[in-house]
Amino acid sequence: MKGKLHIFLCVACVSLAVGLTACTSVRDARATIAQADSLLTAGEIYDDSATLAKAVDALRPWQVFAATDYAKACFYLGRLLRTEGYYSAAMPYLLDARHARTNHSELIGRVYSNIAYMCRLEGNYPLAYDMYVCSAEAFLAAGDTTRYLIGQTNMAYALAEQGDTAGVRALLEPIEQSEPSAALAAMCYETYAEGYLRAEDYTQGLRYANSAIEAQGETPSVVTIKAQCFSLLEQYDSATCYAQQVLKSTDHLFLRANALYILTQEDSAANLSDVRQAAAERAMVLRQIADNQGDLARAVEILQQDLNSRPRRWGALVIGVMCLTVALLAWWRVMRRQHREYMIAREEQNAQLQQQYAERRQKIEQEVTQNIDALLHADDWRKTLYWNDYEQFCGVVNKQFFLLADKLKAKGTLNEKELRLCVLVLMDCFDSKQLATLLHYGESGVRNYKQHTANKLGTNSRELREQLIKMMTGEA
Image (cartoon, rainbow, N blue to C red; front, side, top):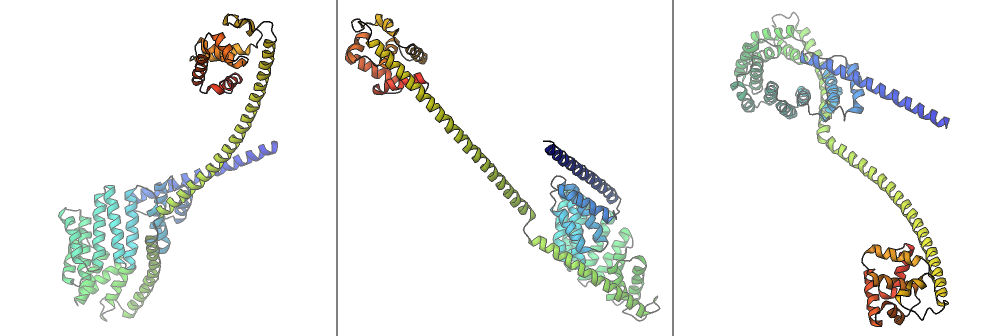
């Protein structure tokens, strides 16, 4: 007994320790998420990947109960890996955030936006467009009008990369007419410029690039568009000037590669002492881009596999149905075993009751036989067969007959003469003539009365005595 108690205490202590550890881990994970939330509001990134990974691992077992926290942890880790250029590592975390059962629409919008950004970098603009559509719908559900319009602009950018200027205009004209903020207007103009650049209408591209600069000032991406447009219009001096400005203002791989490409087109690059050095730097940047492209391709492949696979909710549903089926089978087996044990116990109890009834019936029948014998040997009992003398010879009969009379009266359906008839039938020592004499009826009346009484007791006249014995023994 003591050994079992010690084992129980050990198991309880281990369970308590595990529970406390899990609670501590979840609390720390939520504290990390709160810090990341505050940095996101300020436009910054929580850059501790190890802490974010711990938060994801701590919340993964509880993702059903803390879906939003788990989705946030996955999003922040995926977003950090994406900004650091680890695209194939970032995609699974963003997909886990996408599949989390959370109603946080703004979070889901951000997740889709990050996924779409990687698709756009990889060059898969149709898939990027689809992801931007999901992002815009999520922001619209969250009631975030600004981010919804940004999502619309991103959709237009994906169309612009495909040279679909009509699609770009259809998306951006409603935004322009809504008097957007300067930042949003600049995004719209930059998207127009990109679309016309891809459609080889470089004059319109320059026009909208200048509009974007007027709205929010010069940004590396807009300046790159201007440099490309001037280069393609063969205005090399302006193209070189803006390309050099891009190299001085950003470390973005794609923008630097485009700027270096423009600068190496002409041997008379104004502010570069060695064109070969520019070509070498561009080659290095392109190698880095190629490495990133390989990682981006793997990330997009992971996304496409996820989109083509069966939705996870069906997997969860199947697992739930299987668990429910197993639980029902286990419950059915337990109930079946209990029912079988109950039926065995009931059969044993019924057998015992039948044996008791049989013993009581035998005893009653013996007593009835003895009492009838005593009645038959009584002096002159046949000479005075009137009901007034009933108590005289009933004194010889066992008192259980009076007990039967009490039971019959309790039924409330038999009258006095029917009660007397039942007692005489149970005694089984009178023929029909003697019964008629005792009851003051004719023989046919006795038979009718006997049948009528049997009907009231739920039997027939032939089995009336058997029914009365069952009532005495408690069987009926």
